[in-house]
Each structure stands twice: as C-alpha cells, then as structure tokens.
Image 1 (tube, helix red, strand yellow):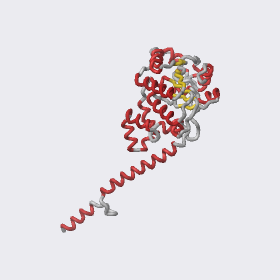
Image 2: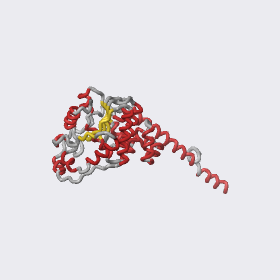
Image 3: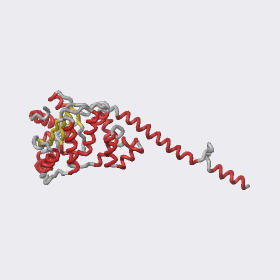
Image 4: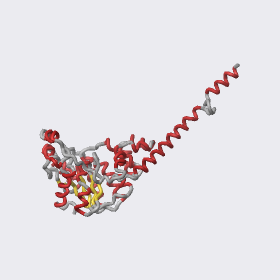
Amino acid sequence: MLTDIRNKEKIQTQHPATGINRWVWIPVFILVLFIGDRASGFVLKQIESRSKFRFTALYQNEAACDILIAGNSRGLSFYQPFIEEKTNQKVFSLAYNGMSSSLLNVFIKDYYERNAPPKKLILEVTCADRYNKELIPAFSTYAAYSSNIRAFLKKEDPNTYYGTQLSHLLRYNSEVFQRSLRYLSNSDKFWLTDRTISEAMQAESKTLQNVSIDNIPELQESLKEIVALAQSKGTEVELIIAPFLPNYRKAMYNLTDYIIEVERRTGLKVKNYSSSIQDPKFFGDYFHINVFGSEKFIDILHKDGIFD
C-alpha cells in the first residue's frame, strides 16, 4: 500500500502526457520567447529598412546631399522640394518634431560618419530650448545601426537601453517606427502641413503675453558641437530662426537673449527670420508656417543668398 502511494506521488510530479518533469518547461518557454522576440525583431527591422523615411535613409546610406537641413519641427519650414527647385542641388533633412539639439547632435555625427560632407548645413536653432526626453526612446528603432545612438540611450535613458537590449521588439514600439511605416512607399520630403491656422487660434494669439524661449546651457553646447563638427569637415553653417506667428512673436520677451547666447557659444551670426512673414494665412499654428508660407520663406532665403 505504501509503495502504491509513493508511485502515485511520483506520477503527479511528472507531465501527464510525456512524463517529463514540469520544471523543464520553464527554460523551454523562455527559449521560445527569446527566439520569438529575435525573429519578430528581425522581421520588423527588414520592413523598416525598406522605408523612405529620412532616418531610415540615413542608415541605408541614402542621405548624401549638397544642403543638409537640421532642427526640430520648425526645421520642416525648409521645405525640400522648394529648395531643390531653387538651387538644383540635393537636399536632405534631419528635422523632426520635438527634436532637441542633444539628440540631433547624435544624428549629425552619424551623417558625417556615413557621408561626404555637405556643402552647407542649415540649422534651425530653436531646437536648443527643450530636452523632450519623451522622444529619446522612440529612436531606439535605429539602435542596431548606430553606436552613437546606443551610447546616447545608455546615458540619457538606461531603462530603454537595457530594455531594448533584452527585447528587440521593444525597439519598434514607437512613433518613429510607425512613421517609417507611413513612408514605406512614399518619400517624406513633402512632410509639411497645408492647413491654415484657425480663426479661434488667431483670436487667442492676441491675448498672449510673456512667452519665453528657454536658454539651456547643455543644449546650447550641443549646438556648439554640431557647428564645430560641420565646420571641421568643411561645411558652411547657417544658423536660422524660422518664422513665428506674428502675435506669438510679439509676446516673446527673451528671443534676443536666446540669440545672443547661441551666437556667443557658436561664434556664428544667427539670421533671425522670426518676423519675416506677417500674414496669418501662411501659418498652420503659432510655431509653424504651412506649405504656402514655406514657399514664401524659401523665396526670402533664396534672395538673401542663404543657399548659395
């Protein structure tokens, strides 16, 4: 009777179908998860590598140009098709919504490591007014391509760095990957809003007061590093401030101080076009001209010799 009980206990500790100890399935399950993660990450990387999105183009060695554009969303004001039409030169843009100068610095380094120096770099300098750390994890999508991105992630967002080392799928859980999917079949060089600012926003802009732009020393230093790298490679650098909606610009009380600090650190003159367009119909919101405003803006820059 005692022997029968012990035999039953032994059977209960084994898999009912195969007789394999149940604990064996834990490492097997982990292995399956690991293989599935790496296989899925590989598939998503192959999809992303076919995109015509600007950062994919950078890492697929398709970014060589004569004129390089850089900045945050306000850098999109330098509309590539208009510049190419005016200059008959190839233009490439590293502008992106919410891009800070510290993150932009990483992509500028990668550009110069992978391409011959452009003749000119046009840098919209308001990208040094905020950190926007929420955007940093989104660019882990390109960590596999760039040691500079991996080093930046490790320093600025270690949780994302180690998380994406453990799981490659996490690299593709981002707005940046989603945008790369959007441009699988079409170039993103036409990326600029064609909407006109609403009457409600225009009316609200009349009440704005004491709007500031932040002077952040670390981000100003990133601007300085970008300029120094470009100049060391023989690239001519233009520092530009793109237009603001007139009422918003009037409410900004410290833009001049910001410009002075950028000029002090970089040693270059900032060309201030913040008030160069006055008609609200050329704006999509307080901060961005629309595609019609960009056509007007590019005409102004062309006449001023910015692209020469």
